[in-house]
Length: 116
Image (cartoon, rainbow, N blue to C red; front, side):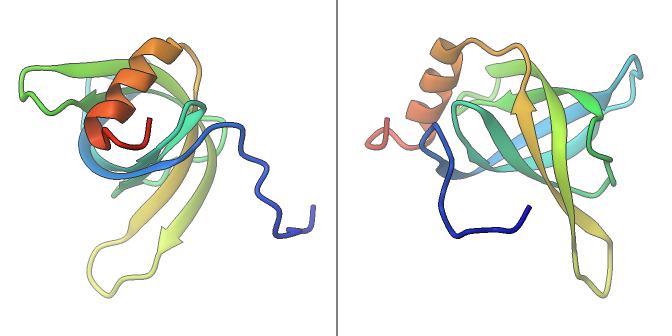
């Protein structure tokens, strides 16, 4: 499908730089990531691991209080490699599979209180 320049988003996007970590499937291994933006439908995340579209991950997003976080399942929708001379990194877009809108709204309000 050709890009038409029209934004088809249902939810407002909040730009952020929020630490997160994720696990793939039943693995106990955790990987660090950074949430770059969040909306009611999903997140854009930068990470150092290549994830293919369709991959389901358990994502933990850390809130403003260090001992507080939100955990949810997400499905990778798209992947882009970020050009680098040193370490390969990636941006992914992932949609929420099981997160309640009240939790998303609360997290978005913590990130940018004036935007929600």
